[in-house]
Length: 243
Ligand code: 6PG
Image (cartoon, rainbow, N blue to C red; front, side, top):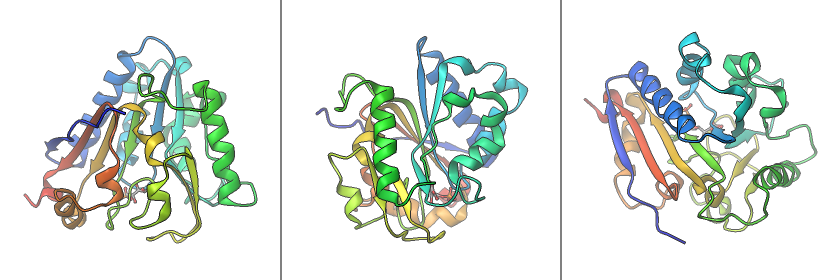
């Protein structure tokens, strides 16, 4: 397996500029693929501004909705109608208005356990991909969006939890969260997240300053280990940098 290229850090002024830069990168990834496109979204608060931007005329009219499929990198194990549900947030802001219903691929949470949900989503990803093994030469996703929590988690891979070291499963159940909201999670594992042309982290605000400093070390944090086999980009604003 090829080793990932170093992270490309891009500094922008503020959250507005950050969403703008993320939207432009997303469009560039869409334009680079004339075939079926797969985008893996993220939850939390960081991507909301980007999702709002994608709902504007400027972007919604440019996106070839009939060719784009939308996945989610992790989910809180709550009902699809719960405001804490990550895919529900993305659907509410933009997907339900523009994307064909069968192009939206939520992690199912109306099942008995996070493990069952993980197995079902893994099967859905494998059927979309057309194989049960990931081929480094044929990435699963065009773009994977990521956020970073105060403890260095990304997706729902928390520091020192076994899920962070998963190498075989594409999706894992995470019985307990390390940060709020304290609900069980379901998360793509690192190899599935890595299988993309680009992994794009968004990090904004002074509350991210402490974790940003730890990201510059070789500490074994999930956010330090999550890297695309293609390009990995960290979009960071001045407030997070301490500027
Ligand atoms: C979730 C996320 C999680 C998030 C980080 C950053 O379900 O909460 O997917 O990994 O991206 O916790 O969250 P913020 O964007 O809210 O800072």
